[in-house]
Length: 112
Length: 115
Image (cartoon, rainbow over all chains, first blue to last red):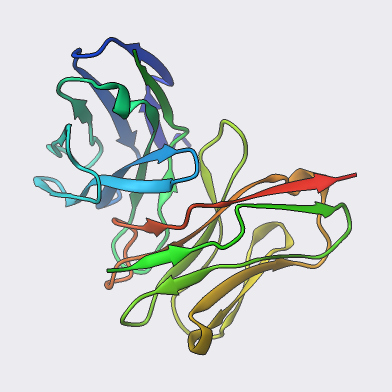
């Protein structure tokens, strides 16, 4: 009964380092998305995918890459971390059609 | 472009009092609307959703919301608030196909419940 699993839960990076935030879902959902949450800003969409091999940019894609090689996994890559990327990152998945998104527990990232 | 406005950043109510959280959306077609709740340090949990049909939607934990097209609103209500309802609440609108792949969120309303 795992749902959407994000790893790691916490991470501290130095400016310029790269890393990958992992997201996996076991519900066979077609849709997967990444959001970042900053105080007073709500959640903003970074990238999303409507199926394996298909990705697209959201509202705030700069500095992030994604790929979707399998239905289950949707990793988010930070190429060269910047302090402005300090945030809480949420992965979500959902089925096609009229349905809600299911969220992971989040990854709290600090870039120093 | 779609947008969601939650006019109240922070609301404080007493336990047992009624609650209404406001949400206004901007969208050209029939919107697909959601309310999520986030407890501190946690992910988001769906409270309720509206896709079509009855404009009064019932959700979990005793919450309900009413879709009013004429006012572009989807306000969340609860008749009697419990201390465990203290959390942050987010209104969101979905894509034209009704999918959840690219939600647009409001900035959230933080609810404090006084004993």
